Image 1 (tube, rainbow, N blue to C red):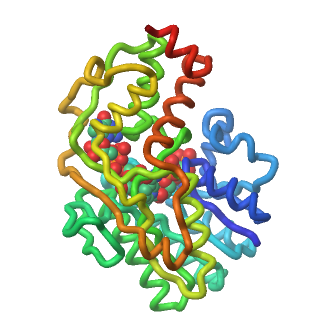
Image 2: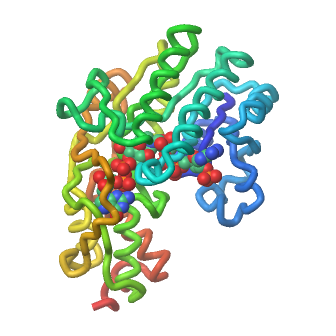
Length: 333
Ligand code: NAP
Ligand code: GDD
């Protein structure tokens, strides 16, 4: 089986590439040319895979570049993960977010329809589409009410994917994935911002952590578990959309409490609220019902919330302090 992953340099792309390789897939990735020109910095998440994957330069903003990659390779499956994925940035530059996330998705679908209509397509939908939630927990039938340009762009991508399925009979499925994290998470997202700062405080490199809304609630899982669900969605008889979530919700404050406690610290001594990190419109609370994924796909997550937080803190302590957890914590007190 030959799979194309867009966004292979990102958190999910790197874990998905590992998962597909372990299943015997030939794995191809679509990457930006600037990434190819700066591999040491841009390929940190996939550097250990470079001799086992095939990379193709292309841009989500350019239909001809996507057309060219798809025309030269007979892909069986396409996982479309590439996106401007940071919600706060979408308020700063909504136009770029819309362009990349909506047109990029449309270009992928159009090229596949034209050249590889039997290639199975996965779209990276998001719980951010539920936004101002209408019911809790959120499921596949919950109405969307996005609260950011990012959320709106994902609703558009979701509808495009459904339309290609209905209009052209393509095997096109969307995952509605709730927040998922791990040691490879980008530093701008709240979880990694917290765990990396815990490590910097422990190492004596920082003295405080400035955050926005501590009361926001998220349903946090582990990326490694969630990429398995993406693959399962493309192995079904018929294409469909699935919520993927842990079913538990925690506040940002609870995440802080746990992450600091892993390093033997009390978050109240370090966390400061800064208005700059509030969003113009917030998604206050998300929690998903993944019963359909559990029943139809046979998907179950393996990480608990505390296990995921601990893994992230330990990873950041190891890379920042350069010592195993117990030693680093002992020396910081
Ligand atoms: P991520 O770490 O931010 O990775 C994003 C990927 O998209 C990177 O490989 C990035 O490439 C690529 N990309 C961004 N702009 C691009 C452009 N103009 N052209 C080509 N590639 C571009 O995101 P992630 O957490 O792995 O998430 C993967 C997907 O799932 C995204 O679509 C995200 O919106 C969606 N999603 C994520 C979550 C979550 O909690 N993680 C939940 C629901 C949905 P560079 O390395 O070159 O920047
Ligand atoms: N990033 C960030 N930085 N978020 C903060 C901060 C801060 O300093 N302080 C509080 N928060 C709050 C945000 O307001 C939000 O309510 C919550 O922490 C989570 O923010 P992020 O980690 O940036 O993630 P997100 O929920 O906005 O978006 C992520 O999950 C979506 C799925 O629901 C991204 O991965 C999206 O790509 C994804 O679709």
